[in-house]
Length: 549
Ligand code: GLN
View 1 (spheres, rainbow, N blue to C red):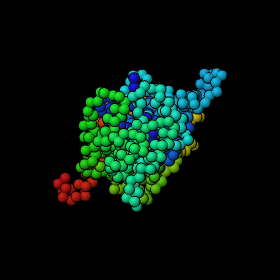
View 2: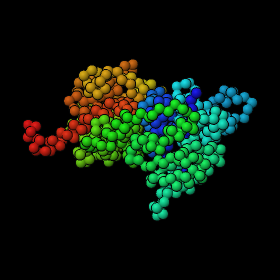
View 3: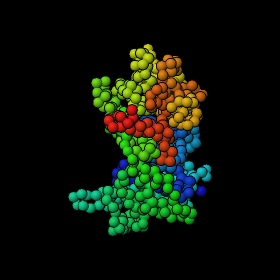
View 4: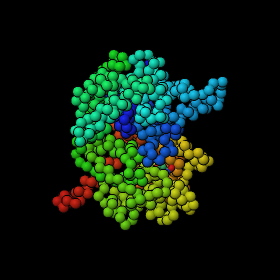
């Protein structure tokens, strides 16, 4: 039988519930438990697939092709396990299931209501992952903030489960904020008291209170929170702001969050947490030997969360290479032929990000051309790969009007075109080419060197693809398709011969990068940037220059 931990949030959003949940999961995993995490989101969209990144940050795609909340990315990166369709549930999905059942006649004669029908469906999803014996502990993060109208049925479902499941099978953690008032030089507990009170009014009493804070909590303060919020003093956990999210598991270990949870869950089996690999990674992350600057070109640059998995993959790959990866955000709309040199000449590598739609794409194409011609390490992901194909067609093959039919439906040269199976689809939600697909790599190519094997599997999220009618011309002129889907023949990887590192991938390697297993493409891209940086410094240094001759 699995045990269940629920994580709720109070006072404000963006307190990092996902990171706390993932950190706790990491500690429990390091103690030998089989753990998974799921996110329940109270919004009505079926999934975040149709949401603009400005609304909801990156859309994270799982192996089985679910478009999910970006917190699932944290879960996978921390735990090095795959999540799935079942790990992200929204109010939309809950209602859709209940309404479908109503139409099928499952509730004949009954009035369908929030309680018990919606809450029953929420409870079913809450325990689902724990049903088949694959996990010892299931952590459920409830999106939103306690007190929101839309999260009420979820909190009610937690209340019911607290009663229905055996004593010791459920633990509720409430994450809250202890603000520091600079003028008074004091940490304030009142918002936390209110938020716990509000949670208690709905019948859910937290067992543990995790306090986000800028300043350390002293014992008096912990005692005060314990007293007012009805928890034991040791169940008041300090979560200080950390310099990196990867510090948080160790901070939670120091605060004994895992032990307190396990005690609440009546678990006796508690071997010491083995976090040696994690600590090793953190050591490399904190003490890099050198630095590389990578230009990240996209159109949602104002928002850090829009490219979350890419930024995290840089962190993993940087630690692996023992360099600090400094990411220079470049807005694609701000790049034009006149200024491109000025904007890109200080960089050691260029990544053109995934994306949709027309805005800013000419800037991306100009940047790709610069990287290709100057020998600057280049890495294009999804739309970035498509832009690299268009740039090559226009500037090397002389196909002036080459374009993607996504941006120009009438182009005479659709180098990037909509996939056949996409042409009949009219609905937008969940209909892209999604999830993991195999890719066969040609021996002797850069891609082969990077992956060290000829068959890989990576995750996708796109509607357009490289048009194979142009492949022969591309390959004859030095841009080769080094990775192909063995079943459909779709081009998955292109690379420029003779360039130190120029690679574009139709898939999203950033979705599979974890602390334990950084994505090979990112690791080698950063290695190439490091080489480029070293070569540039050597080139600038006249002493070394003469030595090199
Ligand atoms: N817009 C492009 C497509 O649909 C690329 C998508 C992406 O970058 N994820 O094919």
